[in-house]
Image (cartoon, rainbow, N blue to C red; front, side, top):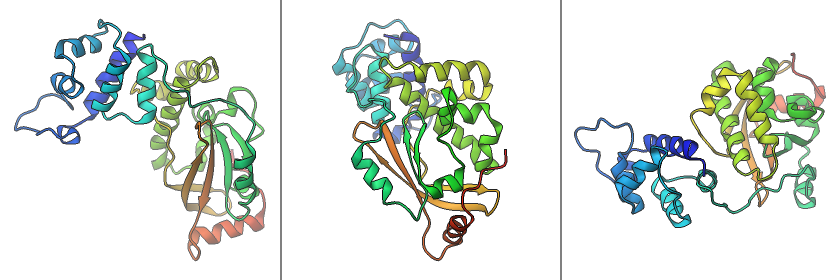
Length: 279
């Protein structure tokens, strides 16, 4: 049981909830950011003193039933729920079996996507497969080795990696990749790659450390992306993500509606061939 991390996670998730999120009246005067401790305790069926001790790093290990109640009361996502189980010293259902091998079913879907950018990524953001249009859009992302294979590592160590996103979108993308690494670390089991990446970035990047401190955990992709390409400029695309059952791999597909400027730019990229971003 990691009492320090558990206390931090519970407090931060409590502070992000509003009374209306859980069916409670807001009341005329509230000095607390988010829910009060006694409100969380009532939602989970535990005493206020017991919950307070968990946030103060001095509570006993909660049972699996109590952890499930906390997850429900705090309206946690599935990723956050699994994270909570592991922080309290319990096993969450294993969803990750990390491998570079792309299964035949996912590969068949990927192979049929010839006219739109598509890529298969691991839960660490390692690009396992790219089709021709994806390489033309992003450059070859399969050639990296070591920790640089992970997109989150490159995002915080290689300034050129950020050129693909407009400046106003970069802070949002930073939060997405950090929360994804937190989810991968929670599900890693005996695989230490996620932990090694996090440890290195905590030392090298103050920006990463500040976001990591927020303790956000999620596996998510934006439904819409604006990407910058040195040849065709800004491209506004829709993003669809197809996860394998254990969420170890994701098929990411970027599309544009026919007749749009983005659709025309993708067609132009198809003619231009593979273009690398200017570093």
